[in-house]
Length: 246
Ligand SMILES: Nc1ncnc2c1ncn2[C@@H]1O[C@H](COP(=O)(O)OP(=O)(O)OP(=O)(O)O)[C@@H](O)[C@H]1O
Image (tube, rainbow, N blue to C red; front, side, top):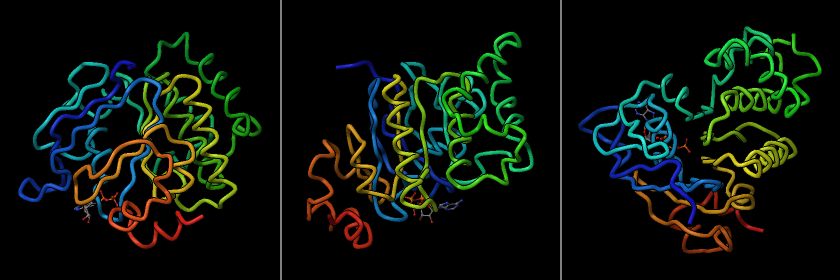
């Protein structure tokens, strides 16, 4: 089995100490995995990944990145240590150009490496290279997600966490974003994907984890999960169950 890249142990997190949302989550994500995190609205998926990223308080438990304890490391230090997080909203600087967004993202690198790294990102995300002076706020939803992911990959992180990157996108753009994630994963980046778009997410996942009421209720192979009435009915809820139907 491959090494652990990101591990949470008995993680308790939320917004108010007396009302934890994430209620003791143990999750071990292995190098090279594409893991999808599913669950009904309000299950705590976003809160869980925000706690990992350091933007929601952790009340107890532990978070390790490649074996290092990062539980209480500040969010910007986590990025520098190799934890890339793409939030659901406000994941680019809308008032800045594509190029400026990438310049900020590579600012942690030594000056001599920055231009080369931006060129590598343009090579991978060729749509962004077409007009680097375009304002990020003027991009389509799909292009904006590409820019957000490019920014997150700027420091060559071992792991990237994405909070519902398909939200608000057309089915065509969802499939573009998901195929881009598959490519990134094939290049060796471990991917943790929070999704409501159950069927599409299961189609690209190596492992599925289902969270409900702040706890892991199921984890395992994604094969057959979309059609499993027990899982779909109890943990994904009616709306997702309908989406998951073939
Ligand atoms: N900023 C906040 N302050 C207080 N409570 C919050 C905040 N954000 C979310 N919550 C609460 O935390 C709980 C879990 O929400 P969370 O967004 O983590 O769920 P989710 O599984 O990501 O749901 P969805 O798929 O709808 O985004 C919900 O009860 C929600 O109301």
